[in-house]
Image 1 (cartoon, rainbow, N blue to C red):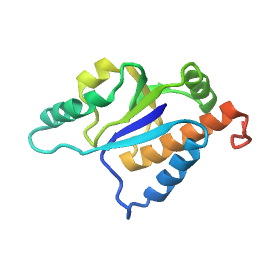
Image 2 (tube, one colour):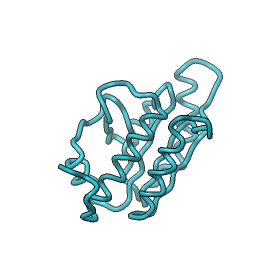
Image 3 (cartoon, one colour):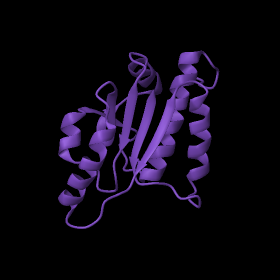
Image 4 (spheres, rainbow, N blue to C red):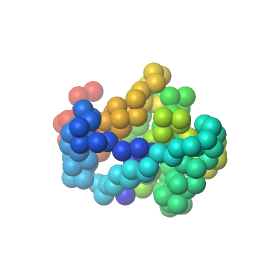
Length: 149
């Protein structure tokens, strides 16, 4: 099972919504997949918001799954390196934090961090990029010609 958990959701009017739905359907041709959208928390300072979001996220991080946090300071991999990394195990959970990022408790509980870019991406765009890369990885593993090295 491959999961993507995001804090925040896309509206039907978002310019990224169609691409996300398309890649989700493509991914499901190759692997069991689910996308969970959790509501961003409000009220208080940044740390209290992050703490509330960590509490919201915690029950969705299964112990049986490898969890990878998306963070611009995370590990930079090529698509083929990512493919080799993900081929090690069939169960992965990817987490995209809110506009404030992720609380230190979540970062400590899931020390694997992946950078999609050294640039800061809007969360909606990061979701599209992640879904496209997951689809690309799955097609590489299946021997499908989508990826052109």
